[in-house]
Length: 300
Ligand code: GDP
Image 1: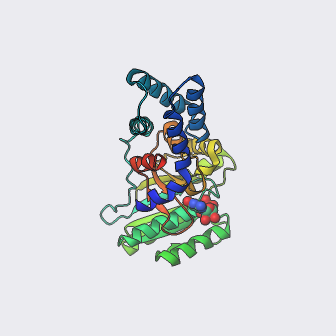
Image 2 (image 1 turned 120 degrees about the horizontal axis):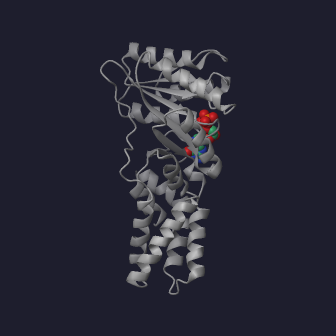
C-alpha cells in the first residue's frame, strides 16, 4: 500500500492539484466549470462521470457557498469516490478448494502486461508462503513462454510449457494437473492475447476454460488492461467481456500515465472491479487497488 501511494503520487497528483486549484478559485463561473470538466475528461475519467462530478459539485458549491481549500478537497474526494464502486469485491480469489488449487486465468491483448502481471502475482503469493504453478498457455510466441519461465525461476514457481504452436488448452490442462499433483495452492495461466477475430479468441479462451474445468474450477478471469491506452483499452476490454466472464481487472502501467481516471471509466463501463494495479516493471510493482488510497493520492 505504501508503494501504491508513493508511486502514484508522482504521476497522478498533477491532475488532482489542477482540479483543486480550479475549484478553489473565488469566481467559479461557467468557464471555470468547463475547465474542471475538461480536466476530468483529459484524465480519462470518461464523459459521463466527468459531467456527473461537475453537476454534483456545482450544486453543492452553490448551496454551501464558496469554500476553503480543505472543504473543497473533501467535496472533490467524495465525488471521485462516489464514481468508484466501493462496494465491489476486490479480492483476488487465490484460495485452494480442498485438494484442488485455485485457478486464475490471465487474459488480455499482447503487450498489456499479462506475463509480467502473472509473474508479479506469483511473486506476491509465494512471498506469502503459498505454492504456485504457472501455465504458459501463450503457445503462439516462443518468447512468451521463455519470459514466463524467467519469471518462474525468479519467484520460485514451476512453469508448465509446451513447444510453440501446441494447443493452449492442453498446456492449461497440464498446468492444473501439475498443480493438483504438487498440492499447489494456486495455478495461474498466462493466455495468448491475439485479437485476431472475436470468434477465434472466444474459441481459444472458451476451450482453455472448459478444459481447466475438467480438473478444477476457474476462480478468477483477470483481464489485463494497459492504463496508457485510454479508449483503445476500453474497446479491447469490451471484446474480452463478450467472450469470457471477466471477474476482475488488473490495470497496468499506471506509473506511466497521469491519466489515472481510466480506473473510473473502466469500472463504470465494464461493471467489473479493478482488483490490481501495475506500477512498474519490477517484481514488487503490483498492488491491490484501494479506491481511498487512490483518490487520496490524486488529491495529495
Ligand atoms: P504481455 O504481452 O501482455 O504478456 O505483456 P508483457 O508482460 O510482456 O509486458 C509488456 C511490457 O510492459 C514489458 O516491457 C513489461 O515490462 C511492461 N509492463 C508490464 N506491466 C507494467 C507496469 O505496470 N508498468 C510499466 N511501466 N511497465 C509494465
